[in-house]
Length: 436
Image (cartoon, rainbow, N blue to C red; front, side, top):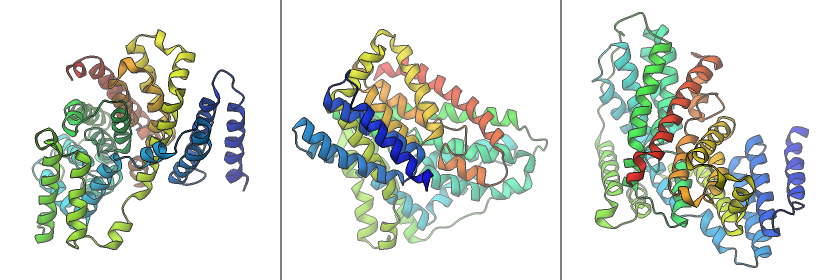
């Protein structure tokens, strides 16, 4: 009982203490107190993460709005940001792909072409996982690909660690590449949109797809070197999957939606509105049922909404700017500021939800106006480099639960790969990203 009560007591004490911090004005103290409550409840997970989001919404629309003598609508608008539509469309697509086996068709089609030599097989699994994670949940893509990989793992046990680690790592890396790949991306895009920096779907991919491809290559090489197999050929046959009419329709909707997302600047329809197409088509035609609607990842959407409302609170009170001033971050070079935020994000994301970590950090980063829009995008990517522990991400937990790896395996390989990708992100942010 005390384990459940203690986090609430600590959160209340933190809130009271922040109200005594005279270096901030009253609205900033309240916003800082709400931030403290969110961090404690998100880290301890004493209640579901999405419930903490509702607590944030309640406090911002009542206590903070009254203190600022403003309407509560800006916080509601942030909580129910249009970016949630983008993710809702992605969730519906992922659900349809799962129900009609399109995801398995894509996975097996790619893997049939990689041959049986160990490294191409490893790379094939990782590229396939990353591709799926660009359009569907990292957790779902990891679960699917581990199931597909099971025959390979059984026939090449000394190579099993590479594959079991490679799949969740690739899921995290693939999530970097599209706006719907992982919730931290959506939080960054929404924050930039509010600040007057719209981020089209195609621009996000143009910035981050090269990082994802290079990250997959680096990760595959590291894992292959760590767990080099003794066999030269893996005796396994990937089955051929034939989908029926509904599966073909699902594949067509997937392709149509992706094309419309990538050509937003040509047709002028917002990517958020495009995301409604799969929602209408799948539920309107009855291909997805009421149970499918109920099983969508609504908790993730609400978690993202809480992060966006928290960001709005930090923005309207000027708390982020004030913290940046007090820490003297403006005295550091842009490169040092970037490195500081990247390291903090990665460390936090390894011990708490990467969505929660991003929701806490990005509003502070938005105060560094000289690094917009680079810094929020880099932070969102850094949140996906949490690969060191089973608790870091659900894909990591699924891989660890397979029983083929130990925590040490994940910690060593994941930390090394995470550092490599952070370096790639840092170099990209300070060099060719400037072309945008």
